[in-house]
Image (cartoon, rainbow, N blue to C red; front, side, top):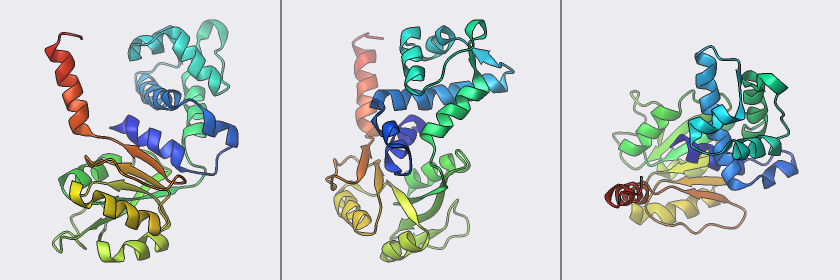
Length: 227
């Protein structure tokens, strides 16, 4: 799930150099994956890594790794390979917003709560500051990971808390209507976890992640032995 979230967030903020907006989409996904791997390597006491090592951890070629890292303007230190800490910082400078960016979760059921709990403190500049739901039992609950508000206050809270991005986890039949309400409230990017393909204006970045489709894809390749 983290890959899709970081990919969506990268394209959603506007205060990055123009050239960075045109990195290949797959490169953005892989940079997110590389960073998580590099953090694990640091935890294990490793300070440098070669392209072929990083490639092996992601089942891709060393050429692909070098090409991705070349896109962001970083080079290895000869025989020592890439400096892990420096490479993490370079990726962060490209992937992360300059200032803290606020997120809202729309639909605070099981999935919404799980995503909120997963994202808490994952990235210091990406902060979930509100959730929204229609269930009175969830609204204002002190046991929530994040404060939950009534959907009737959507525009008010989005504006007062400067929320730029929304994670949509509402029932499928409410998804399109909710997307329209988010756009009208000033949201600039939506990560859609529903099973409905949304229609949004061209200036809104939309990332759609259908877990059912992903699961069916995995099942198909297992069934056919293409693993």
